[in-house]
Amino acid sequence: MDYISVKTASEKWGISERRIQKLCEGNRIDDTLKFGRAWMIPKNAEKPTDGRKKNKEHSHETI
Image 1 (cartoon, helix red, strand yellow):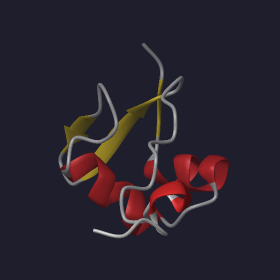
Image 2 (cartoon, helix red, strand yellow):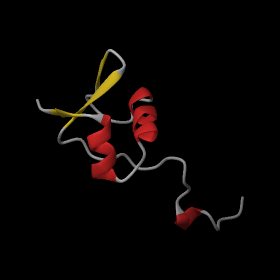
Image 3 (cartoon, helix red, strand yellow):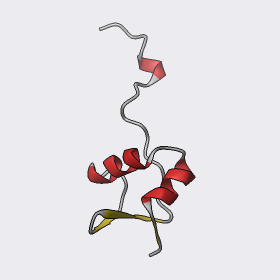
């Protein structure tokens, strides 16, 4: 399996390197490996959805 660095994933997905590190720590990206202090991300990994943002469809619902 081929791997890419956090920096390469950051450029590919358009998000910060720190955000990708947090996604790796939270097991949000499948099949990542930690090598020392660096994360190895599978080359074919997809960008996970941003769980910090609410879905627009549900933002107008009342409880």
